[in-house]
Image (cartoon, rainbow, N blue to C red; front, side):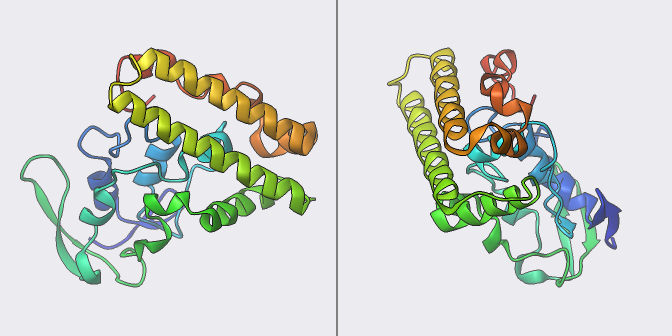
Length: 231
């Protein structure tokens, strides 16, 4: 199948469908490895030029916690693309046995994944580059070096703390999902307050939007406690 117009760019709906499997959640474990923004970005991954839902409400806050594409696992990022940039492959599109032939341009749809591996998002250099890009589209004057580096530090601390919370819950050291959510919301509030004090109201609102002032609403409590993968 040739590339099709898809979400504002050329892309492969078949690869997108494969990435979305098995439950349209794109392997995102809601509240642990991402939220709806990261699910959507994964499904949009096969667009060229690559599209993201970066203008959605609350996006920069959720990016701050989970990055553009969420945390591992993301097996579909590799499994749903042709290995080695092959031009004709069998792409698995469901949890069953259904497969379809799809023709892809090795220069467009079959991407090098080095720029999107979810494990790489914890790297400070990648974090800084992504934050700079997000700020440039939202704040004309930018931030001072001190403010920018301070914001990078705050995001890095928040990410590390969230990973530790998730580890504690998985190990049984944290009794239940509700306590995880309470502590995660406390972490989000602490970050928002720190960032607001660091960069000021105008810059904070421009970068994080109104959602930044209500960080506890980023994760839908009912959906999370029910174990749903997407909002």
